[in-house]
Length: 417
Image (cartoon, rainbow, N blue to C red; front, top):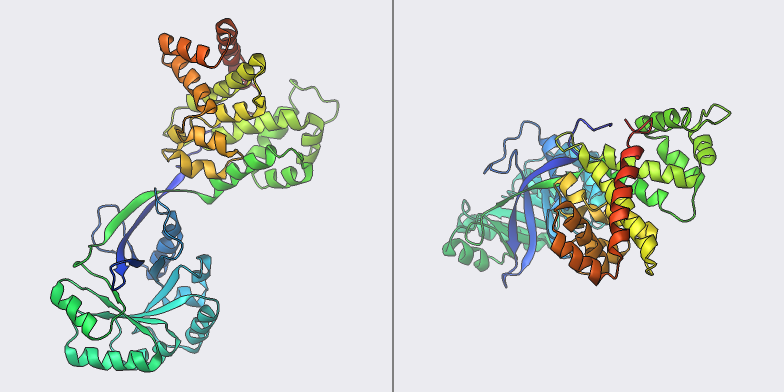
C-alpha cells in the first residue's frame, strides 16, 4: 500500500493579541510569528520567511470562525510588500503593518499606494514622527504608537500629525490604567496591551496544498456529468497516481487487447465507475500519514461497501452512492488528527452527510452507529440500532461479511500496493 512519507498537515504557530475600540469591542488582532506553541517571543532569522508563515497561517485559526469585519494586523517586510505578498490575503480584513524605520523607496511607496487603492489598510508601526515616518504616514490609514515609552509632549506632537494627515491612532503596550487614560487623553481610537489581554499562542494544523488537491479530486470523480477530459487533466498532475493506474489497467486482471498509454484512454476504456471506485481508495490511502495504521484506508473502504450494501438491501429512499461516501469518509478525523468540520468542507457531500460525519444526530448518523456497534462488538446496541433503522438482521450480518471480503480483494489488486 502506498503511504505518504510526510504528514498530511503543516503545524501552525503564531500568537495574536486583540486590538480594542473605546467601547471594548474587538477591532482586530495583531498577529506575531512564533517558532512553537510554547514560545513567548519571536526568534526570527529571516523576516521575509516569518511574514510568509504568518500570512499563510492567519486564515487557518483552528476551531473558530472570526467575524467578517475583524482586522488582522500583520507585519510585512519591505521585500514582501514589493513582491505583493499581502495580496494573498483578503483586503477587507488585512492590515499591512510596516515599521516606521522602513526605507521609503519609490517601489515601496508605489506598492503602498496600490494596496490602499485596492482596499487594504496600511499601518505604520512604532511611529514617532521621524523623517521616514513623515513620508510613510501620507500613505497610511493608521499609526501604531508605543504608549508606554512615549511622554506627553511626544504624544501631543503625534496627535497633531495624525490629525493633519487624517489617520487614526492605535496605542500599543497599554499595560495599566494610567496608560489607557493617557491614550484616551490624546485621542487614540484603538488600544492594545497587557491591560486588556496578553498575546495568546495559536497552534494547530492546516492541510498541505497537495493534499487539498487530492481532496478536491473527490469532487471531480463524484460529478454526475462524468467529465473525462477534466478528470484526465487533473490526474496527469499526479505522477504516482498515473503510474499506478496504468500499471493496474495493463495487468492481466483486466486483459485489454491494446496497451493503454494515456490517462484519458485509461479512463475511457476502464469506464467511469471502475476508475471512480479505484480512485476513491487510492486517494484516501495517499492522504494517510505514515504515522497512521495502514489498516485505516482498508477499514474505511469496507465501511463504505457495507453501508452501500445495507442501503440497497433495505430499499430505503437513501442513495446508495451517498452511503458509500459516508462510510469512506467516516474515519477522516482519525486519519488526519483534525476536526471533521475542517476536513469535510473539501468533500463532495450534502449537508446531511456532512452533519452526520461531524457528530449531528440524523438518519445517516444512525448508520454510522451501526458500524461502530459492529466493530466494538456491542451486540445489544447493534440489535437496537438494526430495529430502529428497520433493517433485517440476517441481511445486515451478510452485508458486513461480504463488505469485508470485497475490501480485502480490492486492496490486493495490482496498482494499489
